[in-house]
Image 1: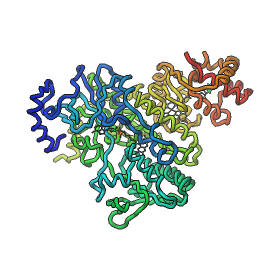
Image 2: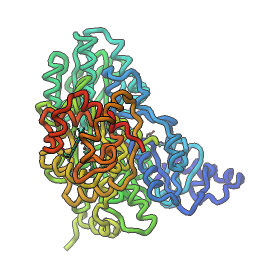
Image 3: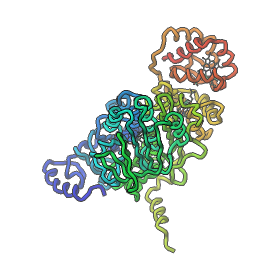
Image 4: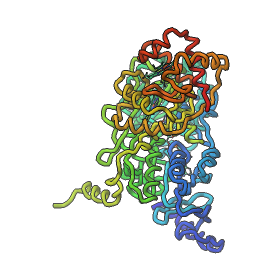
Length: 434
Length: 193
Ligand SMILES: Cc1cc2nc3c(=O)[nH]c(=O)nc-3n(C[C@H](O)[C@H](O)[C@H](O)COP(=O)(O)OP(=O)(O)OC[C@H]3O[C@@H](n4cnc5c(N)ncnc54)[C@H](O)[C@@H]3O)c2cc1C
């Protein structure tokens, strides 16, 4: 169920006012509290929630595949800042976040997508109504790509305030800028800690790339400083031989990799992390990346599975196995072997859009064929990658056997990959914003 | 006998989502759309180093994919990706990209080099890279309006021997200076309409 008891009561309370306001045509239950934002223009409507790596592409491809379907994209922010390449900013490879920032005007104009800038606060799967802080919207099918939120409650002492003192920078924007500023302000000889959660979390290679990028900055500007990566996992979980080699080759005197350090408590006042009640670690700059789950709205709408974290979906349509008519893509979904990455979200969005359009037209659905590639920079002129091709077998998404894998460990391709990585960003952001 | 919980879940799942059973195998568009994150929508690359695939000749794509897969053609990432597909998939993707309209790129190019290349191409390259590079012939790729940095990387790989040059192309390329070759690539990058 989507609404907790309090908001339900609030809604009932608001019902009479709404009735007076003459909320004509609005469906039952959820329409009570807020007016319908945008009555359906045509027969059929897809609502997409979240204008990030998954949502923009889903909205675009539904329109590209069938322009007779009305598409409304709901996003809380007017601008989106890409997490991919935000580590470049921490390393000083780019001066600001402007190359990573996109708006929605061109996308909306080019494809006839209707933008609604609002916070989605509830979903009623039975009535097919989305509630936002500025009104409600009805849908025939809903595509949700809300990304992640943090499991703050699992970390003792971790509050909103603590996240400003020890920025996670795991959603790009002000958090990334705050972390960069702390690094710039730190004295030479100061210590930095990156603390990362157990799998699964957004972007498996992300914390390791960040280690390279921050170490790259320290090596140039604060050579007496040290960087400790406290990994909750027992070992490096992505591109291990490549990252190990990068740390040993370029950052031997700076980086210490410390596995199996699961942080369970923090003290923001002293920038201290506590590891399962046995030890504590303090530093001048602490980048604490908390454990994660699907974006709050997916939890509120009852779309997360038994783990209470991620959304189980059909491997072909990405339709929730818990609520019909709602499709979940990107980080929030359980997409089998496909990792939680921007490229995966992009690829899943196209599969989902194809099948949403097929279902709405009573056509046969099409099996998934997906790709993921994640580039990681290891310094200012070399990058490494992991690649995968995915298909469906026995109702599950699996990697195609004997395909994909990581860059050669001899680093023979790193310079070329650094060049191609920049074009990857250009192409994928262009696809999202035009 | 009582059913285990997991078995019940399976039965319920199958009833709830019949679509899964009916899904048809990946279509050419399904296969090819996954490439767009790098190569651009329908293969129209926003550049500057990722090659456009839109309007590329089908044979050139199929041949490139087979050579990436076998390792005959060097690559950073395409070899790892090509291993995930069959020859039939390559045909489907080749056809998909070949029928997309050509993507004219906006590149800043040195006009003097473009002019120099234009004068050289007819005698040296046109036999295979037809119509100012707008048409492919057999496995010769379309190069009109292709991104310059991409073609420069490829030419470097040919000259260093990492990528094997077709013999007849080598006959034409070998006598030319580096400057002349670069001028030729500038010319192809500049082709519009
Ligand atoms: C440091 C870092 C580096 C990374 N590097 C790479 C990389 O190199 N390559 C790669 O492929 N991936 C990378 N990733 C992973 C990538 O960022 C994510 O996997 C991707 O963003 C997931 O897309 P998504 O659509 O699921 O979520 P997002 O892109 O986060 O989009 C979610 C959107 O939904 C909106 N939203 C959420 N809830 C609501 C609501 N209730 N109402 C309205 N709007 C809402 C949000 O504002 C947001 O715009 C990286 C991640 C990090 C943190």
